[in-house]
Figure 1 (spheres, helix red, strand yellow):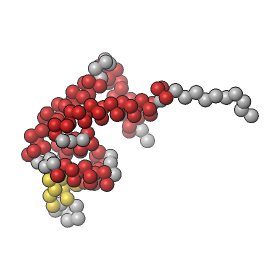
Figure 2: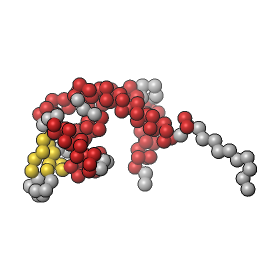
Figure 3: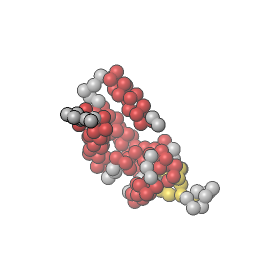
Length: 146
């Protein structure tokens, strides 16, 4: 029989809570920087992957950004509407389209990527380079653990 057992949980020491709050802060900072391009952070992530690998289909993009088909479809449709991405015919599968970055996307690439660098610098301005590297290592370990 358990008598007088009190479980103490401190939210501000919770990894999931702190990661969530850090994500919200990073998202808000990124959103401020992307307003001039009329992009959301998720759309910018998708576009960044397309800068690295142009001419992929939506399924491949979804795997890269780790989003479900419906979410990827919405992101791609918005990027097409904004003129940052065009859809082309997939010669190997007529049921799927290939995604290509446009000249408009290329025209904002350097500034957009520099904004991402500045957001990361701002987020880590109060920690040392060694702490930053350790943090990145730990976050990657958490992200890719099974």
